Length: 149
Image 1: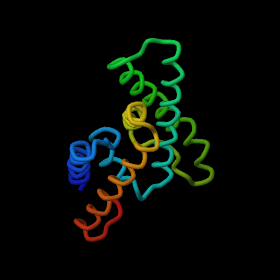
Image 2: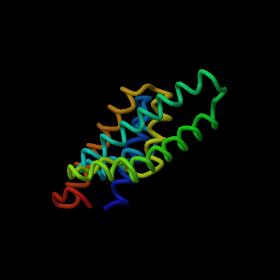
Image 3: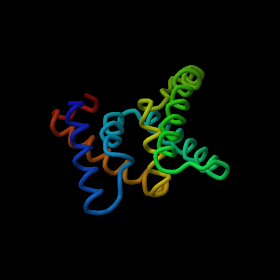
Image 4: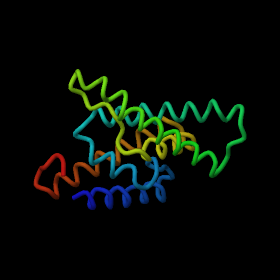
């Protein structure tokens, strides 16, 4: 079912990009977020890290010339680094409260931050949540109601 979730996310993201002109944080992001909709703390952690990376890129762009590929690579690297920190340091401290507060993947926060930079954080997060919810509901229908696959 993982393949179906990623495939549905790709198809829905492409459709939204072509017909409505909004992108759901990259073409693969909604599928991955949809697979983890049953773990809301991980989704929240991913969006918080993405917002942090977006803010860091915005701040650095005032002092450095970062455009195009450099900006994307900087977002991906910062997202990777912050995701690593959230997994290995923050999640270990939050485990006491029985919460899984770490990011979904290592690249996903950087991709989301890159698209926040292009179309704004509110639009990016809302489109990702809409598409990820549709993906999760579709996977649940295809798997006879299983929440996670």
